[in-house]
Figure 1 (tube, one colour):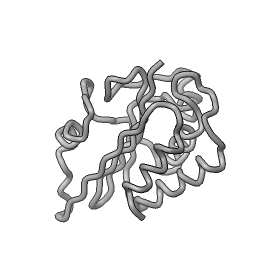
Figure 2 (spheres, helix red, strand yellow):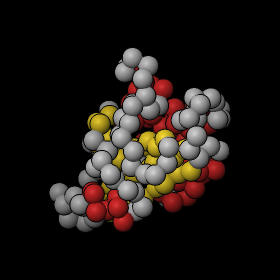
Figure 3 (tube, rainbow, N blue to C red):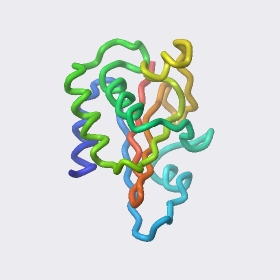
Figure 4 (cartoon, helix red, strand yellow):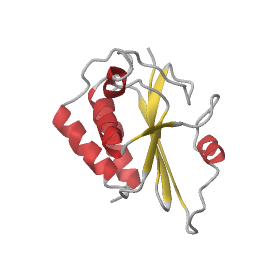
Length: 150
């Protein structure tokens, strides 16, 4: 599977806003890149630090389905659930079962429900709304981030 092709397809699929994606691979384990430096080099502003809200693998999959199905700004459908769900499964296939997933808040539907319906987040970009996933695996760190302006 090719990360660049996958993220291009995600960008075409999501008709609202834009998508930022980056990948960092390393050889020596457990060497983990300096996340803050890597994210800044990848175009993130990080005024409030790196994404730190942990998600389970299942929650990460639901997160991707939600973000590909609904607008961040107006919470309106932006595509079909079936295609979003298939891309979500493909996203998870990039990572081992030991991968750890992080986000920046509770902006998507599945996380808002657990937060009393409120969407909260710490922005990583200059966009009005932004959210996504940071995934850290044994030899790869990837980020898939979604931006929308109102």
